[in-house]
Length: 160
Image (cartoon, rainbow, N blue to C red; front, side, top):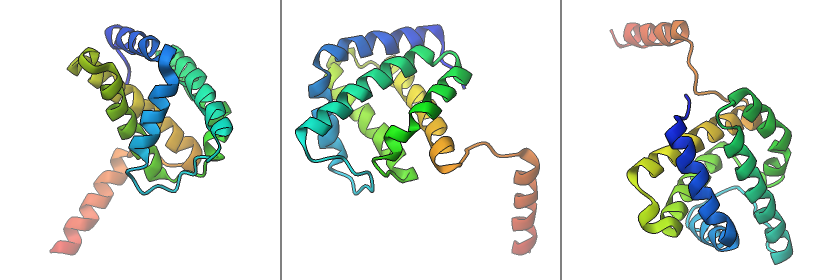
């Protein structure tokens, strides 16, 4: 899965719009996340939260920059995965985080959050989430066609 040049432009432009007020974005994101039951453990102290916000801003900026080069993006996420692992997320938390990001982006970008921009962020977050899940949980959404057919055949034969 790849990002088109137009989608890449939308992503980078929208993130530059968010950067000057990234703290407010993070406060809204934490509010969105608080609506879900999650294993993810965010620190309670403001000092630690501000440190995480700063890391998150730098992480998103670099990840967006590397998005067109997915091998380099994967390596970058692998190197930085320990920061996320310290928060003790489970696999579902990654999906919840991505959905909360979409909602928060919509809140903060308002009318700028067009269908094209939403689709670009969904695609980018899907890529990020798949890489993170692969690194942190050794899971993959890639299915070998032979395994899929064998599983389907097994299900069909047990139903008969």
